[in-house]
Image 1: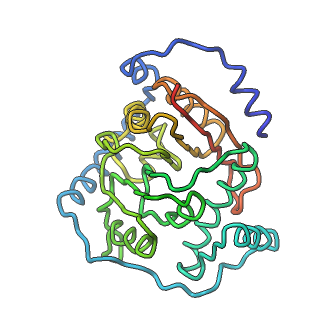
Image 2: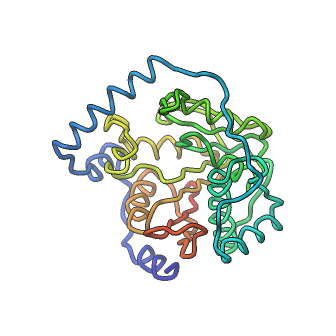
Length: 286
């Protein structure tokens, strides 16, 4: 599938770079009345969590020292990753969180080999849309950065156990060196980085609503423009999309803000089953 996806993308005609306003107009999706009603409900709770800023302090699930029940293929792959990166996430996190980290590390490692991607260590890294940053350890293991920060617009969201997202995030990163978590709307975030990562950014409104966020936060053109502004010259933007179709939508926006694709990898054999393969794309300044 990687070759097929590359052929689709390379066959696209070139075009002049439009202004940000034109990008927003041409990528504006159709919003239904149901979408707007859902958005209003989500906005109420989003604004409430922002006003309350509830936190009971760092929260961390205790590791069990064992993984989830895995298939033989999964076991073999995790053993490979452990040997390459000395990654033993199950010693630090409970089974589900450790498997999330192995899954993210698996994708990054396969993309690295497929794209002949040279990873420079000791770089400043910013992750966009980190949720509770459960995968921070995978980023630390793969990139070995000098500094890692995860940003999340809805960092004060409350869970049913009375804990907030920021409580979990602090638990996930408390043993990681030079790692931080910032509750911020990245569209107004102005700190530069040599590597910027974005796992499954919202480029269509349905996933955003599914994650219980209001449509007021849906502005992929402005988000990508800020990523381009914050990416230092010579730096790399690493974007992962849910599917090849979503990756094409995201690529239209990224190219329109002046980013240039340097390679893409379709994750055909993920560690965990998916309905569609994720796509990792590397971007640089034009």
